[in-house]
Image: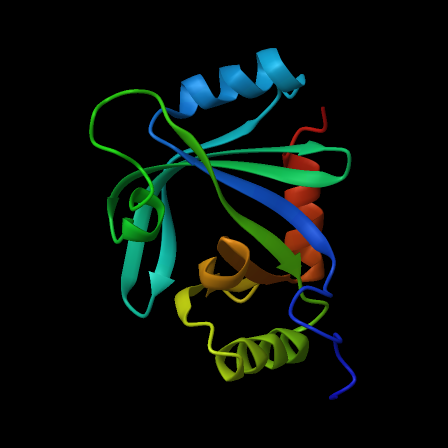
Length: 168
């Protein structure tokens, strides 16, 4: 043990993320069925998925009970990880995609990445937003049925994000 988390699911759980083919319908579903009606919307937002690779996504974020809810609609670019669960028949879809675990620092994030790879979980997405947000997705579908995102925020990014996302 390196002094960090005891296991791959031991970091603080911070997010539930869903993929949809219609962001507006997904927000309405959460509003009507789960009383989560206030979202921060990021339209046609570029998200790094790997070195020199980006997906274009519509994203909606909200907090419910201290957990961030993320709704994702893939729009193009390197969006296959989000699009792969969606059918092409035009009917509305909403699927659970990943949970996120919050790393307390960059060393812990590196440790989690090494541990995920050592356990045989491929890294499907990795990226950053400047120097303030660093993340990767481990493909845990074979064991727990979904991806797990591991993410680190600088103190400044965490404060800005917390202030920007509505609490329902």
